[in-house]
Length: 474
Ligand SMILES: [Fe+2]
Image (cartoon, rainbow, N blue to C red; front, side):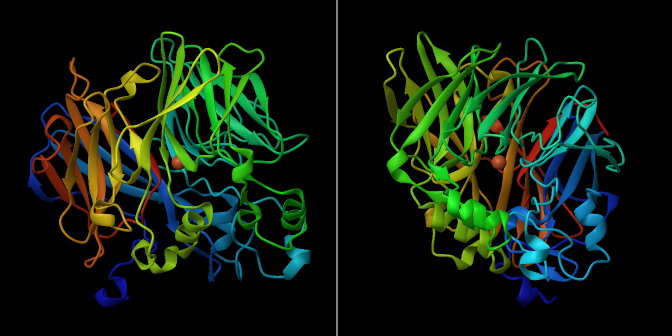
């Protein structure tokens, strides 16, 4: 592929697996920054020679930036899922995926669940590194080599068809990890789980959905798991058509504004969820949730585009996001749910972005600063990292060099820090025309300053979804 071909493409596959010290560096790593940044995302958007139909379908590829002794070592490995292994020798896609049909028409696609491509998130819990995908169980990964260990069902506690979503949340005091799984059978629901600090999974309960719906994320307060369920529904006819192999699963989703948005507050220790309704929202990602006296507060990135536009942007990835007319992202919105069940909206930003992150030490209590990958000047791809002050409303941005794009920014505190923003943002970025990636380390307190450190990778990095930082150095 030539440089000209690469220009403005965000999703160039990375087939090769690397392991090397980053030696082309500008600036220096902060002395007390030590640990490992893991990231996950679709590393290739083809399988068995067939172009896949949706960004969500690409095989999960993990990146590991191991930071020790003032140096960064980079390694990437594809997750050896059944889909990935078979795709190396199959003719066409070996399995159905959310937005891809396998060759062979209806017979080859009927009654087939989408393949688990383990491509959405990666977390470390109870000493295990888990690659997450929201339609199925996690895949356990060796945290040092990134070798695939295998599907992880928490010792059988996560049942067959049990899904474990890609956005778990942690209780800092107990070390418990909370999560949910979207279930379609026997009835549509959000199954809620707690995984204790030893890795033992228990079911808390479930939130019944009025019909098959799509939900990607949730918030955790001291008392509740908070679900904000946008009206993204699978109409029965379309769902049946998808199940019978007549259409894609992703195309079976419809935005039904008339239903509004359903908010469910599921008690952390079980019981009946409290349900309230509000105006129809269009979001995927929740930032933080907390309690403010008797109110429950949840913050999320609300899109002003339609589901069709957003999904079209995700489907059109082969050409790169810049080829669509839609500006990137949505805006930060706070929902305040009062004791009487009123839902009050407060707009926190007007910069458009997604992938909200914050100092995870503030999970379940009010965080002042939220970080986003944003598209400045109406850009269709994220060209900056924003820091939104949720108290004063001040918005600052670290603008990348022209024609670079940003992956999600992960915050990590300086050891011993007391200020919420005394730490760093670790962000992978891509020089689009040159198709080369970098790791940038930003001072979160002074986000507009030049990066403390820029390390050049020896290749590009296809846009990844989510990551996590752990102080354990791989
Ligand atoms: Fe996500």
